[in-house]
Image 1 (cartoon, one colour):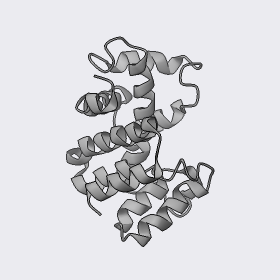
Image 2 (cartoon, rainbow, N blue to C red):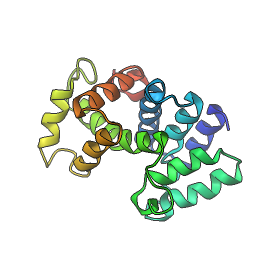
Image 3 (cartoon, rainbow, N blue to C red):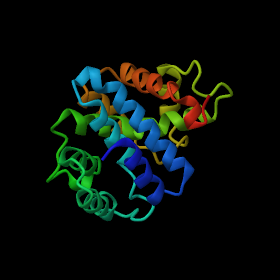
Image 4 (cartoon, rainbow, N blue to C red):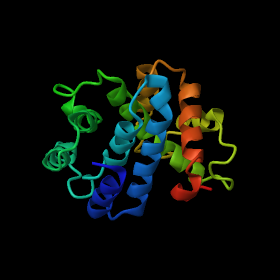
Length: 185
């Protein structure tokens, strides 16, 4: 599957503009991390773009990820991508543990991209000038973006063997590169 086909699949299954933008943010973050972890840029990008494509149709665990995996396999998508997508959901960890760079990176950037988006929405300058300190300050406010699991963000940095501030900075930088597509310019 190429990126155009992945985008078509995403838009077919994901009517929500906000979830499409989340997919773009995760794609950008994963592509940004490719050099650090010697990944395949297309494989990592497709993983980010497709990781939640089935969520609006099957939002409940374990259908989310598993139903999507069936569809991806039917379309001949690389098993490394399918396994990574399955691994970003805790209910699949027995079979798809966070034991590979792509799997760890997807887990690490998923919640963080959502949180950074929330932070950017409440700033007049959006992503411009956003630093790790501002993100961490918002992380301390339990009522802000309350659905985002802060422990997953912290665990993601540990999985990537990065300081939390460095991880946040890397993901913000990736998202800044596509700020207009995210509506955060």
